[in-house]
Amino acid sequence: MHRQNASPPIHHPVPQRPVQVPMMQSPPPPPQSSDPYDNPYGGHASAYPGQPNAYAQFGNFAQGGAGFFTDPMTAQMGFNVARAAMSGGTDLAEKNITRYFSSLKPYFAVTNIYVVRKLSLLLNPWRHVPWSRQITARASAQRPGEAETMFLLPREDLNAPDMYIPLMSFVTYILLSALLYGLSGTFHPELLGYTASSALGAVVFELIGLRLGCYLLSIGNPQLLDLVAYSGYKFVGVIVSILATAVLGRGWLSWIVFLYCYGAQAFFLLRSLKYVLLPDSDGSGDAQSVYTAPRTQRKRRTWFLFGYSYLVQLLLMLVLTSGVGKKVKV
Image (tube, rainbow, N blue to C red; front, side, top):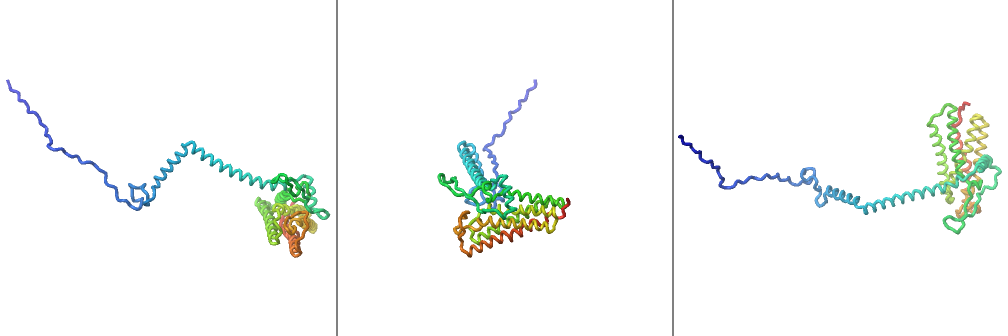
């Protein structure tokens, strides 16, 4: 029998001392730089020492805003403040608009009878009397229990200025000019804007001259809407003159019609504006008061009223009627 050889056991080497495994560490950050764009690790750091970080402030603001909307009481308080501010602005706008329309509304208080009589007065003012406006005493809206003196409305007083006739005559003047341009074959859409701007410019020029004269001559403070109404009455005579030129042609007959309308308009303004541009010495502007200004000042104001009624009206009516109604083909 053969003898089996047994293999010796395998012994693994045992380390005599422990082996230290090196720990991996990240490289140290670069030194701080004054320029925040040079620091990739500190991009969110503040660029100026001693100041808070902008990103931190934004984060705090975002957290605060989130807290504002998540807190019901705080959000409701903010909504109430915003609602109160919007309500106050709306009330102020409505109050101003209401005040403006309330001051403009009496000038449109007219009737059909008033319009017919007023047009007749504008074209035939020679024998009309009286020219002073009528006043009445009514209960004061601001002071209950007290009475205040005020002028009558246009439908109650023929001498009261209105805005209905000037506005309608202004629009009629523009449409009539466009119609005559169309009949003559020279109409263009731009002529509507040109005619409207020319007429409006004439009125603005007239109002500026009136206010400047009132300021230089110390003629109180006449109502602007009254002056606008009196200035717009000239379009009635301008329309009649244009129609006469379109029908009769540019001859001596049309010039007679123009001179008549101009004389009627000048006489109407001279008599009507006497109680507006020539008030009493204390500047109250009462229609029933007696004119007691010094003689020198009274003379200057009278010449100013005469120049406005005759010279200025002649110039403006010539400008408004020139070039309109030429070469009409019927």
